[in-house]
Image 1 (cartoon, rainbow, N blue to C red):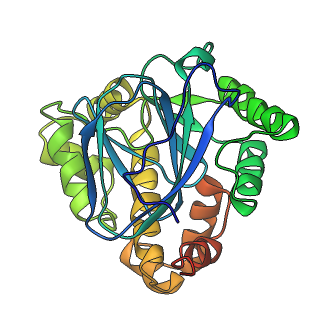
Image 2: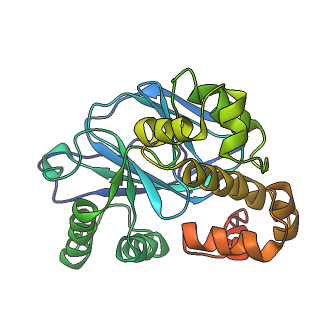
Length: 263
């Protein structure tokens, strides 16, 4: 497995539409702030990677990837072990792709092609057949749904303390009315702030927080029942239904997929 700080070789005269890197980070590791002349698409195969861009922390749970355009400064850190893919795309191949950092929804077609590249240890798609597959990946990214962030943050004086409190205790079951009252505002005002500053409802943000928290616990080997209980669900089935709806896979599948890769 490639070391995390190994840089790809990408140049305009080479016939490679992209380069694939499968990277492995040990717990509590980080990559210092840097920028690249090419774009990067980062998504976790197991674990949760945090990427800092312009003061914003981006997360990439299953089905979502972090898009970083060329020459955008960024850094990485992680709490647990992370196994993830980094797709490097030359700047001249980025036409039609987002020009600002964002979170992209990854299609099953993209995942299948990249899984095939990993299985065959294809770092540079050199053959005509593999270059065509790489171009399909780029075409899929051009059509992907884009989000500002999977789990957006806010510095709004009302929202920031509420979001911080929920992140410290993602299993807290108290509803929007409680948090609105604690901030001295109406529930309707809180919900309006969420839509305006987070781009989603209070409940959707909290469910995404629980997914991110669950991924960390499942990756650490916690049983599904224990994760459901810690996240405030009265039954494992309710947690499983929520997790599957938001990620497209069961918690048990995520836990098995997050098992450390063979050495």
